Length: 62
Length: 572
Image (cartoon, rainbow over all chains, first blue to last red; front, side, top):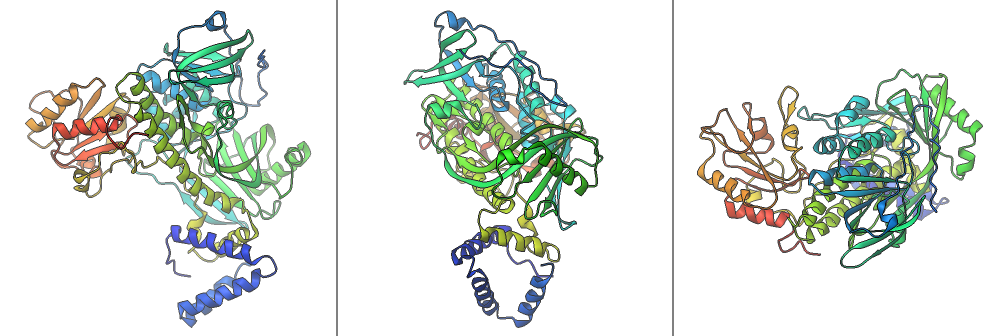
C-alpha cells in the first residue's frame, strides 16, 4: 500500500496541475510528459525502493 | 395575454392540482405599494414568504404557472435545510414523507471502491440527507403559505417588465385578465435558473459552464434497495461515463447518467434508446424489474454566480442568483440558506429595526458562499465530467488506483452542501473576546445542535423564535448581577432579543425571563467551550455573531448594532 502523505486539498491541487500539464503537452507528447514527470518525482523522492513499489502499484488494474 | 396551462402535468406518481387564478384587484386600478413582491413560487420563493411572515412582514408571491414544479428536480434536502424548515415551523410533513440517508457507495469495474459517509453528530436531530420530490417540497410549503394570512399567493402571473427608482420597484405583470402594474418596496427574485428578473435586469453571471451532458430520468419501480447514493464509474454499457442512482419516496427512483460526448438532447431522450439505457442501469444493480417513466430531462453542469445579489431594491436568491452543479446537492440547499439569510435582514430593514447596509451583508455573505461552492463543486464536476483529455486521464488514473490503493480515495468524495461559515462577515463582532475561546462555535459559524433529552434538542427551543438570541451560561449561583444587566439592556431594543439560559442544575433562585436549559451532563458547555459567564449572541438565521467569556451590556449592545447593519465596515 502506498502511504497517504497529502491532504485532500493538496491532492486536488496536484490533480488539476498535472491535468493542465497533460493538456498543455498535447495528445502526441502526453506520454513523454508523464515519463519525464515520473523521473523528476522519483529523483526528488530519492528512494529507489519506494519508486519501485510505485511502479508496481501503477501497473496494476490498467 | 398570459394564458397558463390548466392541464395537470403528466406524472406516474404525483397528482397535480390546478390552482385557481384569481383576478387581482390591482388589474382595476393602481393599489398602494406592497412591502415585498416575490417572483417565483418555487421552494425558495415559498420559503422566503414563510420566513418573512415569521417577522410579521406580508408578501405577494407571483407564480407564472397554475401548478407546482414539473418533474421531481431537487430531491435531496440536507440536514441544514431541515433545520431551516424547522425554524420556519414547517418541517413535519417533510419528515413524515422523506427518506433519510447518510451514505453513498461508489463502484468501478464491479467492485465497491469508496464509501462516502456524510458527517453526522449524535447531537444532530436529522440525518445528513432526506430524499423527497420537489413536487412535495412545493406542495407542503404552499400549504403553509395558504394558511398564512400575510402571504398573498397569486397564480398565473407572468412578470414582463421591471423598473425601479430610489423609492420602489414597479413590475409589469401579465395575467389571463390582461396586464397590470404592481409596485413593491422590495422585489425578491426567486424565479429559478431561467430567471425572468435576471434577464430583465440584464445581469450577467461569472464562472464557467461544462460541456458534458447528463440525463435525469425518474422511474417508478419496485426495487428493494436501501436509501443511499449509488455511483457507478465506467459501467460496461456506458464506457468512460458514470451513473448515479437515488431512491425517492413512493417507489420512485432517480437515475442520472452522463451521455457519450457529442450526443444531443433529442438523441438522448429518444424513447427506445432511453428505455435501453434504463434497463441497462437496472440490470447493473441486479433489479431488472418492470418500470414506468415519470419524467426525463437533460442537463449540463455550471459553476456560475452573479457578483452581487442586491441590485437596488431587487434581491436575487437561489438559482436566479447562481447556477451550481448538482454534485453535492447544491441547488435547493444553497437556496434555502439564502432565503434564511435574506428573510430576517429584509424584515429588519422593512420594520426599521436595521439600516439598509444590512442587506449588503446578504450579498457579501452569499456571493462568497456561492463562489466557494463553485470552486468546490467545480472539482467534483471535473471528476464526474472531465472537461479535457488531461482531466480525463487523471480521473481514470484515480479510478485505476482505487482498486488496489487507498491514498487517492478521498478524491471521490464530493463534499456535500453544508451551512456556510460567515467568518468574513461584516456583522461579526471580532476582537479580543472571541480569541479567549479554544473551540466552541466561532463568529460566523452556524450554531451546533445539542440533544438535551430524548427527542429534545437545542434547536427545538432556539430555532422557532424569530429574532436574535442571547445564550447565557450560568454557574451554580444562577444569574449574576452582570448577566442581569445584559438582559435588561437587550430588553430596551425595538427588535426582539430572546434569551436562553444554560444552567448546570435546576432550579435557579428565581424565575428569569427566558427558558432555562439544564445542562446536567455539560454537553452544551463542552460544545460551546463555555464556562459560567459565557455569552453567545446568535443571529436570527442561527449563525453566531459575537461571544464573550465575560460580557458587559455595552459590548452586547454594540455587537447587536453591528449585526443589524449600524456599525462601520458594513456599508456598501
